[in-house]
Image 1 (tube, helix red, strand yellow):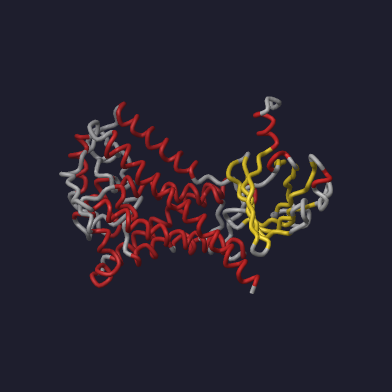
Image 2 (tube, rainbow, N blue to C red; image 1 turned 45 degrees about the vertical axis):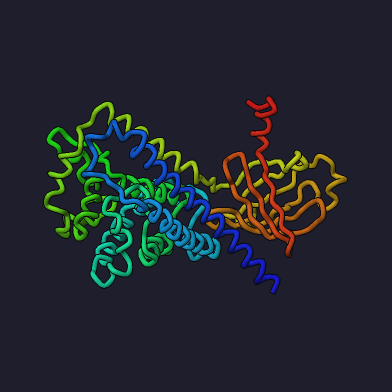
Length: 399
């Protein structure tokens, strides 16, 4: 029974952590685009406004509430990925060198391209009248979408969108940074598609500068003409399958502008937002180097384990007051066989103070900061450790 309770507690803690990351991504993505484009740059982009953007009272509140449910569903999918990676069913590898840098970029591109195909065909299926009424109507209640429409889904639609990543990871190994790039790109493109201002640049003849990419006009027309413009990132499927609206290019020409200094500045704003989204959810997937426990009471060095190099072992290399740590010895591995589950390193953590063995995890918040959490039965504890290099710099003794 204790093991079941420990497993349930660990699963709940994992879900809460994933939910927090997904919620932050939605708030930064949808909220950031809304603040940057719909508010701060609305005057500058007045000529690129698509139609009369009269948002009905209560629409954004409805969208945000529906989006919270979507975040909860997406967090369930993220928890599935972490559990699947931990069990070996899904391959989320911690070191880029495991597959090489070329594979890293190829797999990142594949995640996006395959998601576009998944989205097109599931989206097209959701427009089948019986499915539309049950699974997709809520999203189309926003005839004049806002960035907050991006996650405004019925329960079934959220499940269809959320299940893509767990399914693809059954067959496509991916690095955590590739997953981060994918979900950040997905969130930003989604929020942009619903912002109501044509932010994608045009050529001199008024056609999209990047004709193979969907624009804001492209998706905005989907909300006006539901059976058309079903693609997410790219226009390929709509053109191949004849579902692109025939008036799309003319509509784009009316609200777009050729590349100017202003559009370059807007592009820089979006790049900064993209990088900010990535930094907000950044995860240092590798675990190595020396870290100090609170109060500089001990220093632990993380290295690949000798028997299993894909796992990490934490060795006690220094103690401030050995008498206060009677259950630890210099050179002892107090964090053995930590296994990466796609988000953190999980395993056993021994306390040199009292000898208790905690079942817990080590999360790399950044290259210089670790968050440790563990439970020994009903007793749980958590700590923040800092890298020795970081502390040396703070104290003025670093390079």
